[in-house]
Length: 379
Image 1: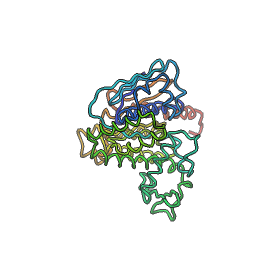
Image 2 (image 1 turned 30 degrees about the vertical axis):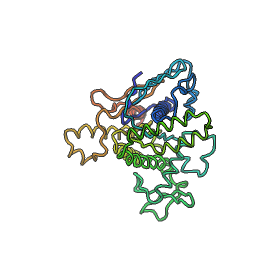
Image 3 (image 1 turned 180 degrees about the vertical axis):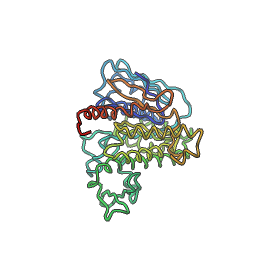
Image 4 (image 1 turned 120 degrees about the vertical axis):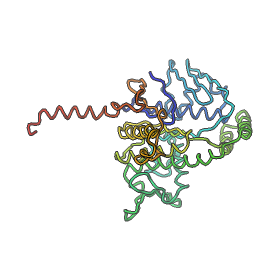
């Protein structure tokens, strides 16, 4: 099994049920866990108790995946985590200056946000979907009118008074309610809108990072709340949320399932390029995706190839692919999950995603076609 390297871009591919989303959810959870330790929202003594970690993963509904022989090793920026024999071991890497990431998980079920309104309190919905729903509401309330989408020259608008989302363009006679729009827009708008909203907020905060003295003061306030046994968990949660607003994020860890959902191949290309442009706006940002789409893989490969060639021919390459879309060699990791194992699919010589991985499905289909041709007497 290959080790998963944490890079600014991580791509997981594999058939349905292979474990792509499980790996993405593990990354999301450990990123959030490390962030909470850095901020002081979680106490190390509490979370190293036996069988605590599986309960922590209830947020993503994968707590039942843990078994007695489950073993996980994860090394973040500031802490090393080892889960073995149902215990979690945490090692502080003793890094003095710490920065805080904002972690967002965008689930495949995001289409439901565009279809329904006012249902986010239904308890049967996964916590991850409800958390993302809150961010989508913030995006809608913030942008309101004429938010440009990366496909089809369309704009998104939101009627704050009546809580109605619309899409429109200059070529349309009338705007269309998002609830009545094509499923591709219903999938794209929550994903791209929230991503755009968070990247821009965090870029502004990153321009004036939190000073160490203020960080220590805020963490001290958090520790007093966490360790105060006279406060109920509900009161602690409210107080911690208020303090969290005073922390500044240095970068975004954007984790999403199947960005290509319901999109035409050309739209998939435009969407991925728009996301890469946003992610490239800060070198510390990270974009993690799961995908079934060869078009998504090809788009990433083109941007990665452009970044490599630009080292020698920057002016010529920018005429083909603009600089803000280039991905540097070594900045993208890609893995196939098959039979429960993880395989690195970056070619060691070229640094690109292996071509055979992109062509695998097409080749299988073409072989069937060639076999059928043998029986076509008209040719």
